[in-house]
Structure formats: C-alpha cells, structure tokens
Amino acid sequence: MKLSVIALAATLALGALTGQVQAKIVIEGRSAQALNCAAIQFSAMEVLFSGGLIDNAKRDAAQEMAVQYLQHVPGTRKQRMRAMRMRLVSLNEKLDLIGLLEQWEGSQRWCERNFS
Image (tube, rainbow, N blue to C red; front, side, top):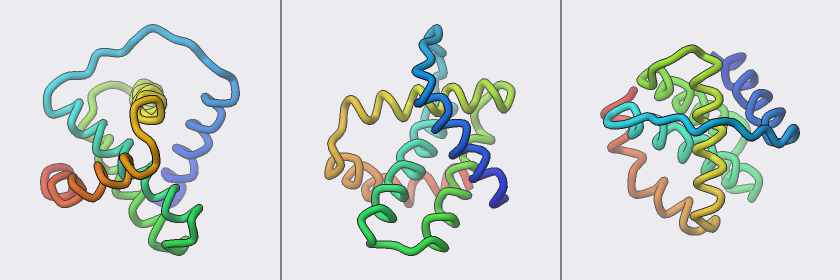
C-alpha cells in the first residue's frame, strides 16, 4: 500500500508540474463523496506533516487510507488519479489552509466509516 501512496504523490506532483489542462470529469453521488474525502485527507495530511504536527508514519497511514477511498471512485487508475488532481486543484482554489483542515476535521470520521 505504501507504494500506492508514493505512486499517487508522484502522479499528482507530475500533473501539477506539467500544468495539464484536460476536459472536466463528472463524478457524482457517493463516488464524488469518496473522491472529496480522498482529496481532503491526502491534502490535510500533507499540510499537517509540512507544519511538523504529525510524523511520517502518521502521514503515510492517513494517505494510504485516502488511496483506499479512491477505490469507491469509478474508472481506471489513471482516470481516478486525474480526478484526484482536479479535485485537489479545486480545493486549493476554494479553501485556505485553515478551511482545509476544518473541512478535514469535520469529515474524517464520516469518510472513514463510509469508505474504509
């Protein structure tokens, strides 16, 4: 599972660096909820780790859980990674760091119960 997290991080980073602009993906219902949970969890853990508030092990475990959430999103692995990138960009545009962490704090238990 750790390799999945590393692969996801690399995929997301490469997509951000290349500035890919692609057609909008439409994901609805529970799949959209799972995607949102995955993006918030992944991003929040990176923020907490970067701020020195959690260690590597905690970040990796939580990001592995985010990867598990993506299993509830339809499509190929490549399509899910693309959707994740797009959701992360959207979150970054809409929320500041405090807003992101508040949203994660308010949804983490629900996400875990529904998508783990």
